[in-house]
Amino acid sequence: MDKVADQYEAFPYPARDPADEKTRLIQGSPSNIVEIDHFLFGGQRDWSQPFRALVAGGGTGDALIQMAQVLTSAGKQYEITYLDLSSSSRKIAEERAKVRGLTGIRFVTGSLLDAPDLGPFDYIDCCGVLHHLPDPDVGFGALRGALAETGGMGIMVYAPYGRSGVYPLQDGFNAVFGHLAPNDKLAAAKKLFEKIPADHPFRANQRVGDHNNSDAGFYDLLLHSQDRAFSVPELYGALDRAGLELVSFLEPALYDLSRLCDVPTGMGVRQAQTAAEQLRGTMKVHVCYVAPAGSDTQPATGRKMTAVPHLGDTPVAKIADGITRGAQPTLKLGGEKIKLDLPREVAPLIAGVNGRRTLAEIANASGMDQILFGALWKKVEREFGSWGKLHYSRLYR
Ligand SMILES: C[S@@+](CC[C@H](N)C(=O)[O-])C[C@H]1O[C@@H](n2cnc3c(N)ncnc32)[C@H](O)[C@@H]1O
Image (cartoon, rainbow, N blue to C red; front, top):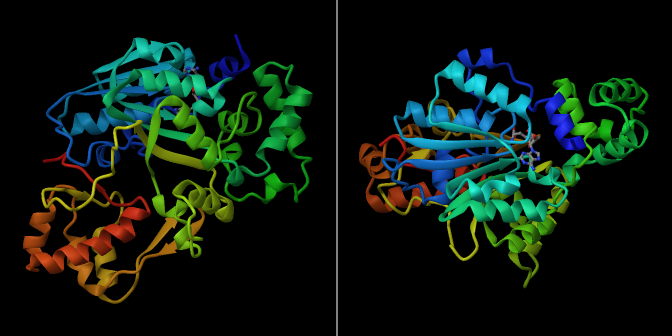
């Protein structure tokens, strides 16, 4: 067995207790169903049609359980294939599905390089896996080969600058303890970790904390034997070579250089996003949605009044109340606090969002004429949408 397979057999990731499924649902990105619809299906997917998804490198099952549970609760049909090399991770994912009574899942132990044999899929989740492959290009290509032409993928890969200090520690620990079996390697590294000086770039990095969460987290962050990060241009390179195109980053505003400074004349989108990543210096990961090259898949917008907006876990009543009193909402993203800029008149529109009402229904209830509504809604979309908080989906219609 290779070292990566050994690691995830010994330390299924992330650490999860199936009994916890009785009390909470872990939700996240990529693979929130509403987000998938928004970025890959124009917010207008017909959910009466079965959803065929692959979770590639599914680990202990977070994305699998999230998708299956949300679709089950919404009364929609799906077939989700879970694929991972690690049978101990699969066991935990299976148990989690069992505790919830979820069906419609096919569990496969194997390599994502064989994904094309299992497809085609409308959607592929691949979160935190491609950067651990010996040749990520082969992985990107295999997933492209498993994707339906009308489908898309949600991926997460590591980003370099927000992981400052991680790679010197990984290299150092692996140089001295790399020959040990996973449990011994962990024990030795934890002891040595105590001696790492307080001003080591890793200790100064407030954004990484997985090593404090669990043994699986410590191992994954600091002892991985195969781990690389993708800068923005490196990510674009991998997508280009695989015949994929970026639809959107989850939080497009983070990559929007114009929010930091004037964009030099003639600078292309990719270069500007590259500079934004370098100037922010804090991104640990890139979460994005991608589709087959040439498909020209675009994220949903509120141009169609049949669109149903969602504001995720945003407390809409509280925010609307604050806006009415002239207080601007603040979003917390990573370690940053982002103040939005919205006029008082949008308060009733925000208060009307419940993931079920269409824009037409929200407009009617507000009593505004269409032109005023359209102008105000654009501002809501720009502020919440560009920070990854507003999505469109008719899932619950
Ligand atoms: C960091 S974990 C991420 C798990 C899960 N996607 C998540 O985000 O919670 C990486 C997972 O990828 C799996 N993996 C690594 N290489 C793989 C491959 N070639 N084929 C399938 N799974 C792989 C590992 O076994 C592990 O479960």
